[in-house]
Amino acid sequence: MSILDQQQLLASIHPFELLTQRVIAQLSSQMDIAYYPNETVLIGPRVEAQHLYIIIKGSVNELIDGELHNVYTALDSFDANALIYNDVKSTFVVQEDLICYLLPKEIFLNLIQDYEPFRSYFMKDFIAKHQSLKERQQQNDLTPFMIARVSDIFLHEPCIVEYTEPIRNGLVKMKELKTSSILVWDNGVFGIITDTDLRDKILLGETALDANAGSIANYPLITIDRNDFLFNALLLFTKHGIKRVAVTEEGEIIGILEQLDLLSHFASHSHLIAVQVNKAESIEELSSIQKEQLYLVQSLNSKGVKVRYISKLVSEINAKVYEKVYELTVPRELREKAALIVMGSEGRHEQVLRTDQDNALIIDESADAEVFTPYMQAFSEHLQTLGFPPCPGQVMVNNPHWRGTVSLFKKRIDGWVESFDENALQALSIFLDAQCISGNSRLLDELTEYLQKRFTGREDILAHMAKSTLSFETPLSIFSGFIVEKSHANEIDLKKGGIFAIVHGIRTLALEYHITQTNTIERIKELNNRGLFDKKFATELIEAFDTLSGIRLKAMLRHPNKLEHVNFINPSKLDKMERDLLKDSFKVVNTFKKFLTYHYHLNMVV
Image 1 (cartoon, one colour):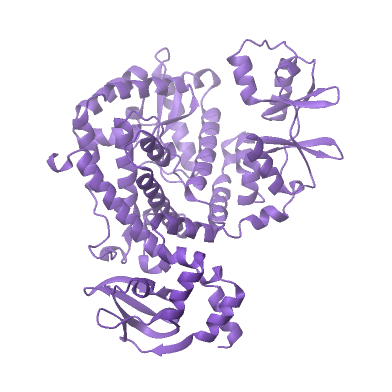
Image 2: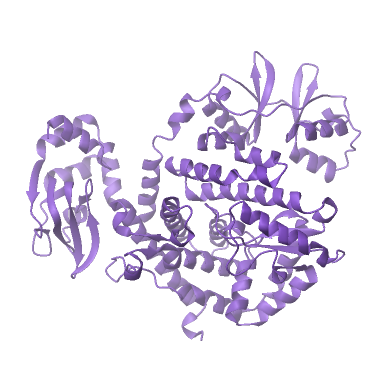
């Protein structure tokens, strides 16, 4: 290998790419290349660490008391801890004939001392490591922003009215153009009326529909030229806290740029899914959405976007699909007499790819509940046609148990609260994540308030709910090695091993503290605000949840059409940093389980 090749390879390895080219060139002249045959012991309690090993080819096993702890392969490095702390607990053994660089201990320690980015990488805690990995994955994300222009993106047709025109005229025109804002022309100056203005000033205020449109407009209108960079549009959104800007060409308004379209553009340049859903007039027109949504997730993930943001976007799109199917299935006169709700990961805004349906229908007391039966049967069938498989537990609107009046659901809540039955507690847990996505949301609000009141002082039920978090062992040994399932191709179940404990444990605590948010991360933040967690532990929980969800997403994308595989990953196929982060995440899960055990006295719960 030439010196130039050596430098290029070294510069491609994290965190060496943080160093300057001059330092990398100097390191290349100070490193040796070595070969070690299979079963060679490189570092151990009786073999002092003298080098940082950087693998070119081959693999090395890290053992603790004879148990496999880690596997290092090409471009991995080890063992910085032995060099920094002179504390060797592991034995590093060549598993497959090894060719590697040897960076002398003295030079490595000098790097640690002289270069802060290098030092912070090798000596940081779990939270900082997680954020470093995300920053590394996203380091090239700004490039598209820096070269893409406003003219490259989809623009909505502007809805323009005169200042003196009645608001009613603007609303009619707004509906015809399917826009979410009205531009108001006032003697050479434009203002804007948003959907928020219409809600606050018309629905909740005292402004009449016959009033001048200009009387409720906001001035001045924020604009951007079509030849400007999209990055500058993003800055406008951020600076002014707005969701749309007007686009101009030679001073004339030619369109409206929506914030959601800006985000969608960088996920998929060819598809604006939300727009397609909104304009669909039949179930058939929605049938292509699934493939486009998969592409969106793949694109966002490849750019290093956090799973929590991907899942929120996907959940919003799914909600639009649900709402559109509801609109196409249920007669107009019945839609506001019921609340269509979603639950599970959909209700928590944590869905990244379509899994099975989790939905219910709450019906107003004034309506005939039986009238909804055929429409809900059709609704479930339409969702299945669009790629939402039936729920194995039949938590769907076509099941009478998950369809009923407010009073009927109150009776069911009473049954859930008074029972220690596993099925009742499971139904209660499912309902706690409910979100209304179409129809009359006040019906769900009434039930949520009723449920919260029924749970005052019910520590016994809370403890039985929390005990479920201990149902599955965390797949981490006492020496921090992974415990894989031999019967499942040496893989680990991320959902049972970690995600479930965080989601369900936080959900239980949220119920105890009367927190109405359904998203797990938002619940963690609110529990931190209530003083239950300190900020450090809350952050660790969030980063652990992010890590587990991110690795799970990779498994999903490998098998997008095989739901049985979505929770399983083979840790040996992850790179070293991902394996380390996964282990640290499982350690946080174990700490959280201990917290729940202490908080709810789970050792005393039968």
